[in-house]
Length: 133
Image (cartoon, rainbow, N blue to C red; front, side):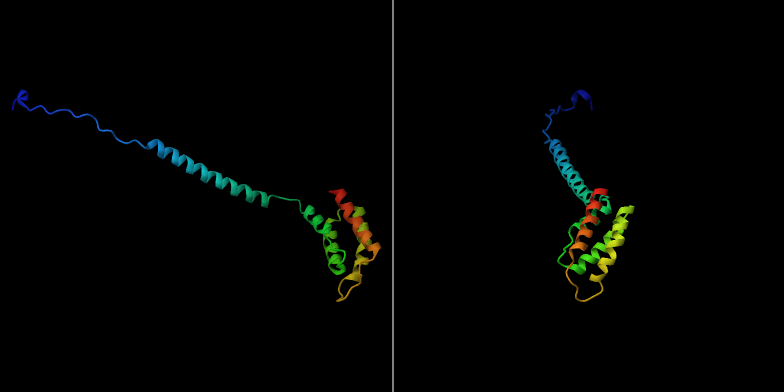
């Protein structure tokens, strides 16, 4: 066949192809930002709750919340956290004077109310601990 005798076929115009790649890109970008934001938010909350807090501050908060109406529990709490917080000589001396006073309120089923002098020693120790921290 001679090339001049071939039938001529018309060239058709290009068909329009719907291009949604920009929408896919923007959608993936938004989803990615949401996921990254959510992960960042929960990581920040976890870090806030687990960051290193000085344990002495927590112990002092326990001493601040002592209920002086419950003498037995107050004596145990003061002894426990007082020993942990007695770091300098002055607080150790006050605690040495305070612990024998607190022995009356421990190891018994029924205990009397805290006397005023013991309360003053306890409050003095707590106040000195606040000043030291």
